[in-house]
Each structure stands twice: as structure tokens, then as C-alpha cells.
Amino acid sequence: MTKEEYRSILGQLPIKNPTAQDMARMCPHLTQDQAVKAFTTGEGYVACPPLRVRHRFQILSYRKEWVEEIKVSRVKDGTEDASVTGTKNYPPRLDWSYASRTLASYADGKSHGDVFGNYQHMDEAMKFAEANWGADLILDDWNSIVEFYVQDPTELVNDRYHKDYPRTKAVLYVTLNRELNEVINDHSKPQSELFDDAISQMTLDSVIWHELRGGRGGYTEFNCAHCGAGLSLSSCTGCGHRFRDDQFRCGWNTPLSQKMVAFLREKGHAFEVGPEIAWETEQRHFAEISKRLAESPRRRQ
Image 1: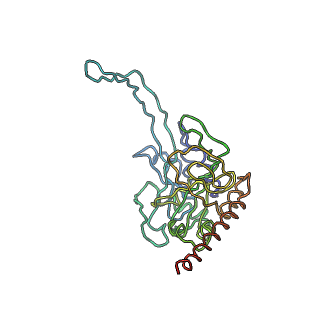
Image 2: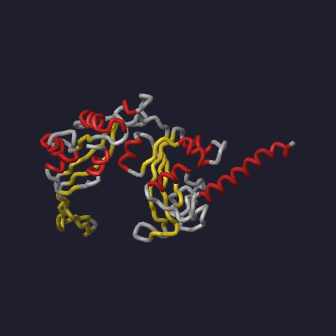
Image 3: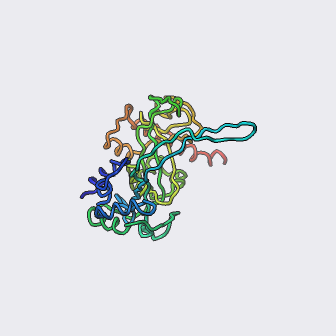
């Protein structure tokens, strides 16, 4: 089995009313009897092979069938009364839960905010990945991880949860070999170039992202899917298209870096306006600011 084949299998989750064959398919490191026993006894959490980080593992879970009582509350004579008006049945469900790891997954051998635990068949899961796609596994040697929401302000979403919200076209997960704040406060180059210098890993796969993240807190930034520029609170700093301020995002004007754009294009994303324009604008602003900073000491003299 290859890593790609196993990722395709995980893509079948969640599975309602899973069979013994379904459970075995998700656990290539176990026999069918072992897989069924692991999922249906105890808490139902089972370690499965990692996809990218060595000494890590995915956690799948099995939830047994359960019945929810539907209650209606009312107050009569100052007393609250809840009566059961019906029930709702939930079938058994097999699903992906999260990723966990061991201390050995870090290149420096130190914990980075993780809570380590023991899970059923974790050793078998890690050994299976090592034996089948070990050449693709890496140790965690990065410092921070950033989620870049690539959103299109020319296509606004209006539904029960959003009002004039730019549609998310992709979420790019990027690990950096520097702390994000160091990159932002380093003014030796245009910021997108500093990001390119610091990039370690990139993926669009949220399952792999959970492996990459570990116990670290993550950061979130927003960029334009139309032109690649940074998104401010209510508009794109490049193409200028506007959207509603949702009081959630922290705006910025840093465009997606050249490596990020190349990666997104490789994965099929098309920018309607070339990000090259955003890079040229960033270069021009950087040159102007650098010139002002260089001249300011002479003005004070």
C-alpha cells in the first residue's frame, strides 16, 4: 500500500453503519478481528498510520448507535417542566478524530505543547507507515505554522452564517523555520520574500496539517484568491474588491509569496489577476519605506 492509497481510503470517512470490512480497511496495520475489537471495545479510539510526520499517528474513532431524547421545556406556575416529545436515532459512525504523536517526532526531542497519550495499536501504526512509505516521513523541525485562507472577494457568500463574506477557495497550511513574529518584524526584505526564505512545508490537506501542527498554537492570515494580495478588514489591498467586515479577521497587506502561489497553481488554483502585480507593489512600497528610513537620521541632524 502507498501513502496516496491510504489517504484515499481515509477520504471515505465518515462511514455510517460501518462493517467489519470498513474497519479493517481503515486499519491496514491490523487484522480484521483486531480492528473490530479495537473499535468496538473501550472508548473506540484507534491509532492509524501517519501520512507525513515520523513517530506520529492518526486517530480514528467509532461511535456506537445512540438515541437522543427530544425534549420541550415550558414554564407553568413558575416551575420549569421538560417533557419528552420524541426521539432521534443516530446510527453507528466511523470517523477521523485527530492526530497525536510521540516525543520522538520532534527533531529537538522536546515537547512543544503536546499532551502525549497511549492509544490502541499506536506502535503497529507507526511501524506500518515506516515500512510502507518511510522515505516520505520527516521529523518535525519547524518553529511555527500558519493557515492562509485564500478567499475570493469577487464572489460573496450570503447564507445563515455569512453576510457578504468572501468565498474561501483554499486553505493553505504552511510551516516556517522561524517564528511568525520574527518574520513580520524582520524588515530586511519585502515580507513575502521573507516568508519564502522561511517556508519548510506546505499542504492543502487538513489531515496532514494536524500532523504538522502538533501542540503548537497556529496563526491565521487571509489573502485574495483573485489576485494574491493581502485582505484588509473589508477589502483586498490589491484588486480593491470590497466585502463585509466580519469582526474576525486581522487585515494585512502582505501578498502570497512566490512559493505559495506556485504551489497553489500546481494544485489547480487560477488567479484571475496575476500575483506578480501584488509583488511589484510590495517591492515598490518596501523601497519607499527603506528610502525614508535611510533619510530620517540626516533630517534630524
